[in-house]
Amino acid sequence: MKKTICSLVATVLTAALVVSCSLPPDYPVTRRELNQARVYQRYIIEESPEELLYGLNTRGEVIVEGTRNIPGQDFPVYIKLMATSEGIHINEYDR
Image (cartoon, rainbow, N blue to C red; front, side):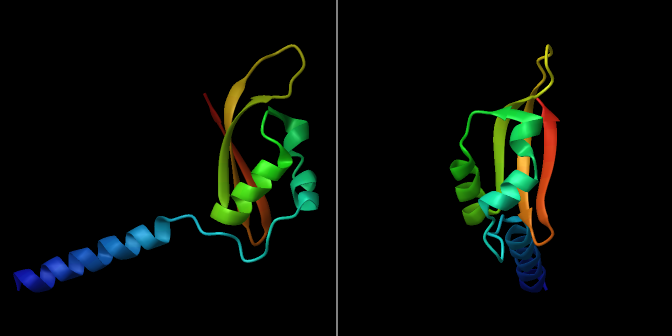
């Protein structure tokens, strides 16, 4: 009985770990798609577009430090870009 419960718990934990990992997208993200997401117009980001594309195409997501592009104001944020089948999703979080 104990052995069955332990193996069940191990299976559930393994499945949760596999599901929570970042996966590369089915189709590579292109520079055009990155430009259509208007990331560089909304935020000031030091990383180049090539670095963002490399991260999106290998891991499926990228988290970078940036600043909201609002003249006269400084709002530091973390920007999370995720490559999905529908396109690039952008989330921002305060630093």
